[in-house]
Amino acid sequence: MAVSSYPIVIPTVTLVRTVNEDAQTLAKVLISQKRMHLQERLAMALGWTMDRLHAAKRVLDGQLAPLGLRLHENSMGIAVRPADTAADEATTRLEAYRDAEDGIHQGMARVLYAAYAGTLSAQETKNDHRVQLAALRRRDAITFGGVGQTRYALSESATFAFDIPE
Image (cartoon, rainbow, N blue to C red; front, side, top):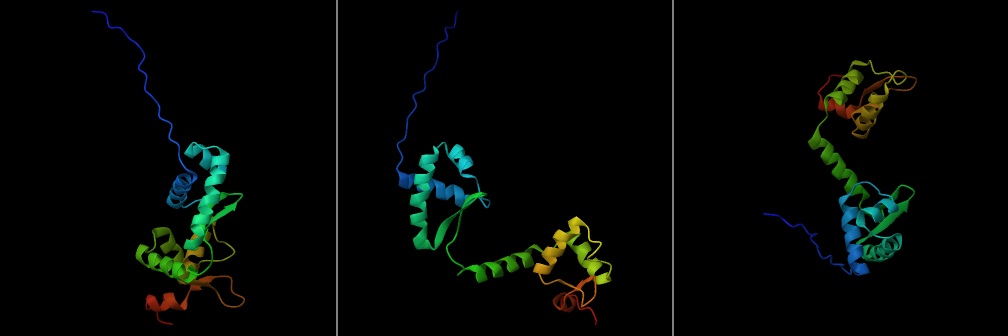
């Protein structure tokens, strides 16, 4: 029995979308991403032309304004950002709460111990330790030593938290 083969034709449906729908799609993509994306990359990912992306951006920016948000654009790409600094204080507190819940990992604990032991020199600090130091300073766990000193030390808050005698 011979099997005849013939091409299967699948009809394509071209959806006509409004610029408002495009703006909604763009908003969903930008909100779901923490990082900025180049406009060209966004247009390719969405299957849009640059003109279509620009039209969606204009509409989206107008829709974001009543919410206190805006489209932020620079050479790194575009993202949705707050239009003012009204939420900055709450955002900082949320980050502190998250830090408290997350705790610290081994590398950060080693750097914290080195600060406690007095062996962490600002002049001899390795690159990977600098990242940990920045995080610990943001958490108010360490301070740079006193005037004329070149060593990191535990902050008063960390000394109190660990119940270390003075």
